[in-house]
Length: 310
Image (cartoon, rainbow, N blue to C red; front, top):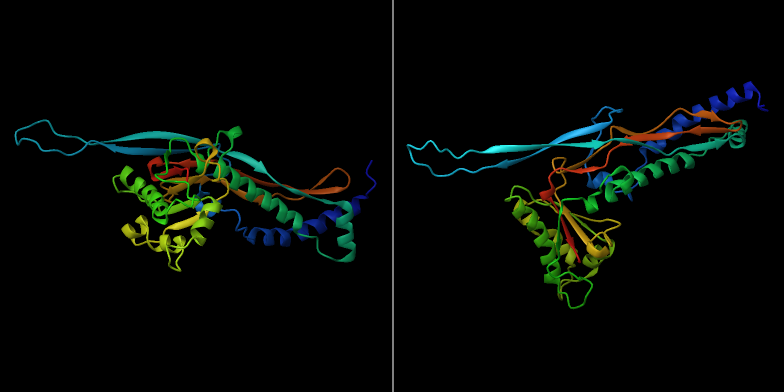
């Protein structure tokens, strides 16, 4: 039997509801820069919230033009092959609870409920999505950006960047060969504009000087790389957790790709939201946080490339 009166319950619940409107607004506005999935993978929220699957089509062109005799009926033809793909959408949750004592103390003293719990739930959401986006989740058969099936995984021409015998030119060549690999695989219709590296490799580029100059390898690479030379656009370079062991035989890996929804995306039909507060048991007020999303879809695998052993 409850020992809290109905009037007390209603007063406490009303107080929590009023507090949450301000708490949740502040939490939604918070940006967590350590979670990079939204910067690295286009996120699509256009599908209906309760859709069970998302379908998309991939296509490829076949055939080529050729010389013919003026009286010939044998005309070279071109065609387009299409394949349908389907990604399941799943629900996940991360909520928080206020105890009756802390609610009553805040209400009686006229102070605001602390927002740390709501922020912790939101951070749990971001951490969860970031992990699935980057590494996948075998329980849902989702693959991540760092190890997606069907993407070309090549060994670095030189590799072993931390070896003092590896020259600056060899390191730069490993990177530019990877960028050029996407271009050659797509007959120069696609170019990798994003480079992901393990933290220690990006640190090496940022601290290793180019010869006897005062310029670092990273500074030189930013201005002088195959993508920038061919397009005039800057190359995006980021460090990502997990690349230290994402390569063959748990070795290092570099990821190069064109960051575009045409190439890859992650569907999130229902972005993170807090549901209304409700009472649980005799003394707690729970606030569920839920979202629905699918794994990463790499649609044009030739425009993503892995380089291992750097």
